[in-house]
Image (cartoon, rainbow, N blue to C red):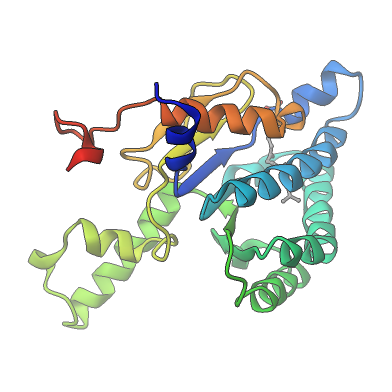
Length: 246
Ligand code: FPP
């Protein structure tokens, strides 16, 4: 481990987070699950601000999976309302922090008025020079890969691409995350050791950090601890020598 100065020099460029444990946080307190989601939004605000202050360039949050549509109707409705409110209320805070807003996933599955608010938030923040915040909504990594395969097949059929030229770069550019570098660090809260269909292609070489805390309890200090843990790791990308010296 290096000194603090070295630590500050190695901020991961892209951090992705699986925000888990909202329901259990609420249950622990004898509250309905939705209260955990409500509190989870406060954590999002704090972590976006912290990531931005620390110089993280890309932050990608797993906010709603394709599988989440199978939750009870009232919970899905509550999550959609929260998202709608988030888009209405956070714009000021995003701009104050110079954050550019982005989404990935099957956005067409979301209610029309939310799609419109997303479009507006993306437009209103498109010139912000700071952190790129990406919310994964109605997202499934396997569906993303199927969509990418279809896109590449279409190009082959139209003779715009020869199938023998398909390589990792082509696939990366066909994914929803075409404009993002791969995550350097994947954080998951609530102690679960799973990747839950999140950015499966993109996290090939990501460092994984699991926090035992439920998402609503995850603080700025916990996020900084995850960054410090990342900075202590030696990333080799399958090689033997220390990658940073190459
Ligand atoms: C997982 O907790 C959490 C989610 C469903 C995604 C995160 C959602 C939020 C933080 C709130 C809404 C987000 C926005 C952007 C408005 P869980 O319900 O799976 O918890 P459990 O595993 O304890 O049941």
